[in-house]
Length: 196
Image 1 (cartoon, one colour):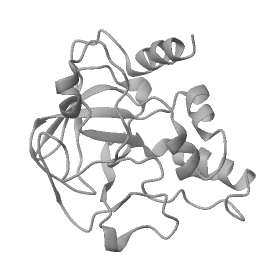
Image 2 (cartoon, rainbow, N blue to C red):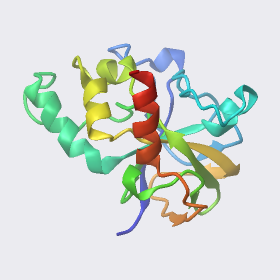
Image 3 (cartoon, rainbow, N blue to C red):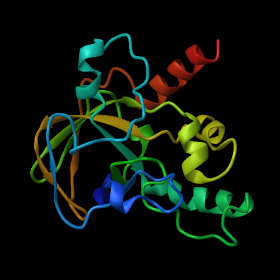
Image 4 (cartoon, one colour):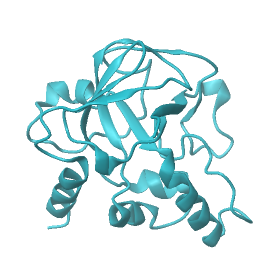
């Protein structure tokens, strides 16, 4: 299956704030510059505690957040069941605070250290996102974060290895890293430590 960027989401400006006040990102109109710290500004979702990464390096390791579009149909159904929408409708862009919505790739296919090579930039998988109250707010119903934890559809954080530009429609390839720790495996481990 082809792996492509379905959408690039960038921070909303103050004058373009979402009417609900919940969504903080919106689809970019064209190509977007991506530097060592990601886009111009990222969502204020704190990175998960990771004892292997020094605090000074957190901003670099958690520069870009990606979420697989393969999960959107499920969330569309659940939102309709929770009466967030009157019927099944597409999940609004950036409902997961994701910078990148990716087609053809799942968390279960990735390991920490894998590279995603795009036409003009390269990103490295740095870890899963742990569920938090933002999922409840952006998806529009209580316990959405719990459902993320149960499904393990957490998305993943990326560090910028080669800065450049990125845009919707860009194809990319996964370059295997050391393959020592899987994203889902690390997610389960960190979640277990949180609930102890």
